[in-house]
Image 1 (cartoon, rainbow, N blue to C red):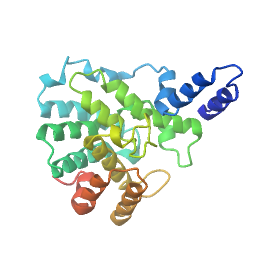
Image 2 (tube, rainbow, N blue to C red):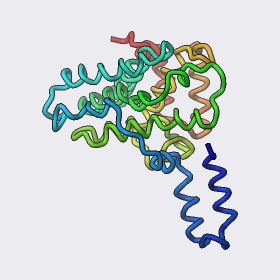
Image 3 (cartoon, one colour):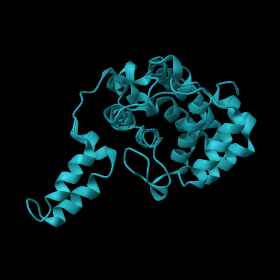
Image 4 (tube, rainbow, N blue to C red):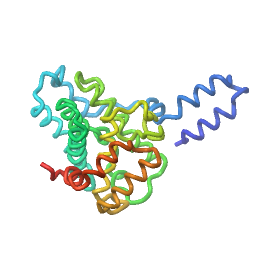
Length: 258
């Protein structure tokens, strides 16, 4: 597999020879984001796409009934690996808890919870052998894993009533400094809801063991969050809210705060 950077280098080398410099510049700008490359790889939707087919609009369904449906899909996703069991539950609970601390509306907190449950829906396309690999992933394996947030958006975007949810869920690996993926969104593109889910996802993942590391104690998790905040990756207001409610956040992230 030819890497995207090699393709970019080859096209740049042919600027002024094969290609007009203005077009090369436009290509280089567009191809900075992972989403550009994901869009070139046509993958047929999996059975997850049938999620929205049973109803023309989620607005026709009561929240608790809708949550019951969403839980089925989130549990299927998390069950792909023993390392991710209850991950989506924890992200959903913590996202809702943080939304309530920020005094967001009940409806917004409902949507945050659903977005947390569905944020890894695109992982259904990632092979188990990659998810459970104890060694460092190759460039092509990283490409496959990083595609999951793009696929989450592609699956959810056409469900009426999920417009906000699909965007927040897809942005859980975006970063304030614009160096996340898949769209390279930055601070001006990210809502408080998207930032909440991004922080909740990092926090919850660090409470669980992974094939390449052990889980972290709470004080180390907080240090990692603060470092990422200082590096311009995570939103400072959300990280500060976690720090001020650390014990409750840990319980929520582990599906214990009820």
